[in-house]
Image 1: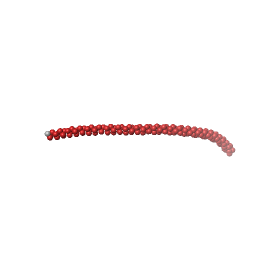
Image 2: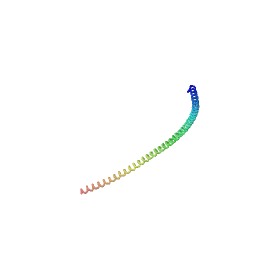
Image 3: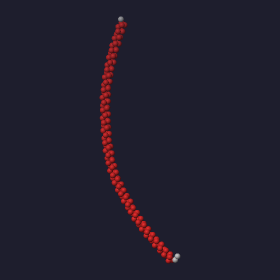
Amino acid sequence: MTDEELIGHFESLQREIGAVRDELHREIGSARTEIGSEITSVRTEIASVRTEIGSVRIELKGEIAAARQELKHEFEVTAEDFRSQNQQLAEGIQNVEQSLRREIVRLEEKMDGGFAETKALIKFSHESLDRRVTALEEEGARGRRK
């Protein structure tokens, strides 16, 4: 091959390389534009998701606050009901205690009356027995004197 042929071949290769380079620049530019568009689209979606998350967060905070208020109200109602039942129970216990005290007093009085009756009967029986023993002793003493 001659120098001129080599130069021609070299120039031809340079043109092909230049064409390939230009085509690569166009392809890269096109890909860069397409990727940039995709990135912008993804950023827009991320911003949309962030906005949606913010809305959901605000909504959930409202629902949590409402649920907290409802639970607080229910707790207060339950606590008041418990206090009321506790008061009723205390009053019931107090009434039972008073009834028991009255019953104890009644039973003590009844027992005292029963003891007094028993004591009177024992005293009467003892006096009667004492008279009989005394009468028998006197009879026995008279019989011995005779």
